[in-house]
Length: 314
Image 1 (spheres, rainbow, N blue to C red):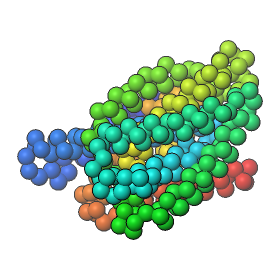
Image 2 (spheres, rainbow, N blue to C red; image 1 turned 45 degrees about the vertical axis):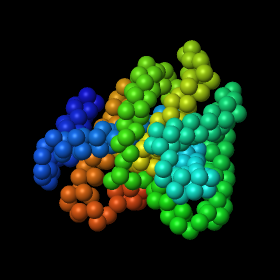
Image 3 (cartoon, rainbow, N blue to C red; image 1 turned 90 degrees about the horizontal axis):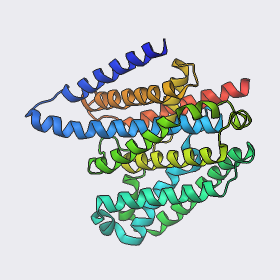
């Protein structure tokens, strides 16, 4: 039954890709396929990184409301952009090489994640709650620091910061596709080898330890993998707070299972179909008269409120 659902989602993804590559494809096909192909790969990488990182984070925290962004990754990204503009100026920021800027973003976000995770101990379940609380506090700190720096920079340079403070699916940094794809592929291989261990971890800390899982080591490894995926997706398109929550909510509703061999590909397929079809609609149906990221955040926010109300009712 689950495999049939995955098969249908696979067909849906193929249809979405065909529509994305062919709708209003005027001009020479060599240019169309090259231009849209790069954008398609970027959307697939972003969909995979956000969807899978959310599923893994919810497995570790045993909570389907939480997402990696609760750790303040979106705030870290915006703070990095503001800091670069503050130090280099608008012109210096604009002339900064794509690979240099990408490397700085990923490395800095990983350093913050490492400092956060290494300060935690996995000797009790409370540490995960401390992780979440620490992430909320750091998110407030990063946003406050970011607001302070934005008030100090030139108003013209502020527009540069504002332009990169929101997710942009229309202008994806396709120049960064090669390193991003390689990193995501390597991370995916590690995650796939851990799929059965993740199934055991979803049972709870005590049960996982009793079944022979090195809980602390696995926890730190998976958290670092999550940090890498979130860093890649944020560096490619910018911060997307609720997309992962939206995808995971649909995934758990359709696939009522905790087997990661099902959840991981299912979340990717749902996320990819959502982004690709959404981009087709906004580009070719309504003609860029809306922004896909805003609709995603709106729907994700509604899902978040629904989850909160359900937990309160329980």
